[in-house]
Length: 467
Image (cartoon, rainbow, N blue to C red):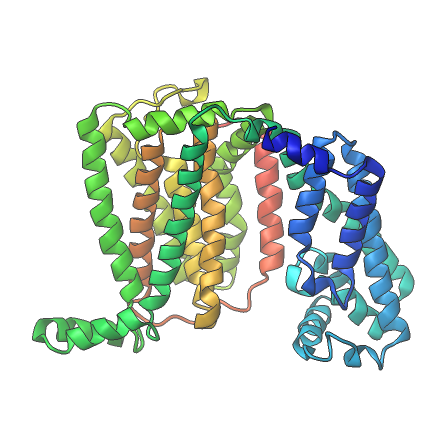
């Protein structure tokens, strides 16, 4: 019996499954337990089972919507009727910072916080109870609760539901493909972990940073370089950026030479393309085509336009110029790299006729956009929180890069070369930025800017052809 058949037999009946989805959405919205429940994991699993049973998508969304509305309503009622006792209830009695964080969010956005808060994980279960404690109008709360749930429920269940509709194909793999799929997943996770660990070790509090500092003191030339970089970096040498530049540039040079000497796809390229051909499905192809539009010139412009305008409006000219230089530089280097290597694509749709493969412009541009965003955001955060930003950037880049394999327009080695080229540009931009102190970019209306970017990117995907 296959793994897919085993999972299918474990699936509960449709009615019970819909009740489970409603209960998960309800519990995750409750003030006292919502932060303790891994709602995303649970709802993805439940929605996957619903998709596999081919339960109507509208019914699944309706179940999640009911749970979300009831959960937020119960939290509001708790705060409205038990205002003085809420802070003494577990687990809030042990974590007063949860209420404080939600209160700051409510004070900042007022009644709109009920609508926005549903989409912000750390404050989602807290905003309704705080709205009740502050005696927000029940009618205003009801409208915000219902309207936000209408948008939230589809976003909450769609990924799992789509996975459920396709997991039979994903689990029934041709012989020998499983090993390559597992190896690829392990490699991606290992690289991400190593990158995160190294970056933490080369900051001022890291062990590698202290070893490098001790070594620099023993050599006059290195000592002068270290002191010069330390003075420019306001007391900390940008060792992480230098290490990233050296490793990425060296690896890119060797990788590019290997690709040029091969005169065609590598053995690894052929095997990985066979893997993705075996995984092909209409759903994956649709996602790949959508990401292709997000990562092209129009998509990137739509994504960064609100942020660039905000930087200009707030007169953060240095940050704007550095980001613009990074995007312009990666576009130029992609063009030069493709002309130098002259590698053909495995498949070239009409809109890519005449376009070359190495390096992948989608992969390199995604690395630059996500990498520079992570670097600027991380500088506004304490050291202990910065790794989360870089993990988020990695999670955004990987699907964008793999989508090029899904639609068959790149070899895996093209993606590796593009990612390395993007890291080189990120390191150069960040080193230039660290040459002198700059005012902080915070406070930033990140929610409004992110919403504007999503609207523009959605319009680009829906209305403009790929380029």
